[in-house]
Length: 75
Image 1 (tube, helix red, strand yellow):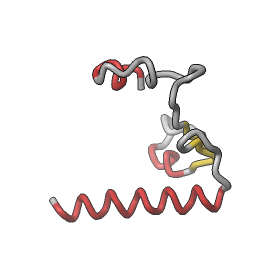
Image 2: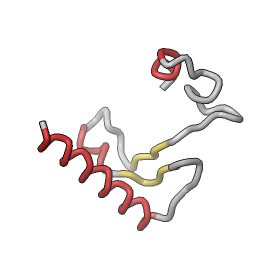
Image 3: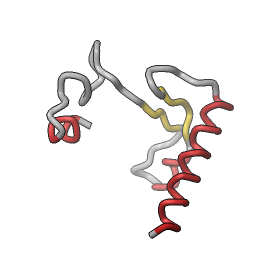
């Protein structure tokens, strides 16, 4: 996260979980280093500075997956 913000010269607003910075965060139910499929086991997420309810989070993730699938089909 920090490296991406640094490359965009945006460390003032991004690049870490600090007061005054914009952070989206995902909490997983299991360790993704043990199994890559664990990245799909989302426990909670902060999106746009808010903690959406689990049902809303499912919709956000479904929309993101559909967007990715559409981009891959367009290639």
